[in-house]
Image (cartoon, rainbow, N blue to C red; front, side, top):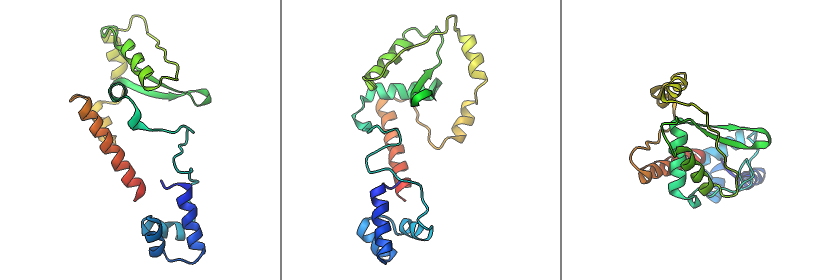
Amino acid sequence: MRSAEEFDAVKRLIAAGINDCAIARQTGIPRRTVCDWRYGGLNVRTRLPAGSSACGTEHNFLALPREAYSYLLGLYLGDGYITRHRRGVYALSIACADAWPGLISAAKQAMRDVLPASSVFGVQRPGMTEDKLDQILSRQMPDAEKRAKAHFVVETDKGLDHAFEQVKAIVTALRAKRNA
C-alpha cells in the first residue's frame, strides 16, 4: 500500500491537470496505480503516513534477533495461534504436551528476546498428554488442507537460515504485490 504522502502528491498532480504517464515518471508510482486513483474517483482507503503502521508501533523486522524470531515463527506455524485481547493486546498461544519438557520455558525466553519490553507468561494445562494433544489437534484442519489454502508456506525443518530466507522472500513478494 502506498503512503499518505504519495497518495496526496498524486492527488495534487491530478488536480493540476498532469497526465498519468507524467505523474508516474515524476513520482515513481506505476501508471496503472495513478490511473486507478484518477478514475476511481480517488476513492481509496485512508493511507498511513510513511513509516507508520496500523498498530502505531514502528517495526524493523531486520533488527529482531534472528534465532529467537525464527524459533517463535516455527512454533506459531506448527502448533500456535495468535489472539487479540482487550485494549489491542495480542497473545501467542502454543500447544504442547508434557512430553516436551523445556519447550514452554524456551518459548518464553524467545519471547523475551524478541519483545524485551513485553510481559511474558506461560499457562500450563496440568495432565496434558500426547493423547489429549492428539485429540485437540485432530479437531483442527488437516495440515494438507492448511497448506492448500495458504498463500505462503514456510518450511521450518531445514534450519533457521533456510526459514529466514523463505520469510524474506515472502516479504519481498508481498511488497512487490503491494507496489504493483
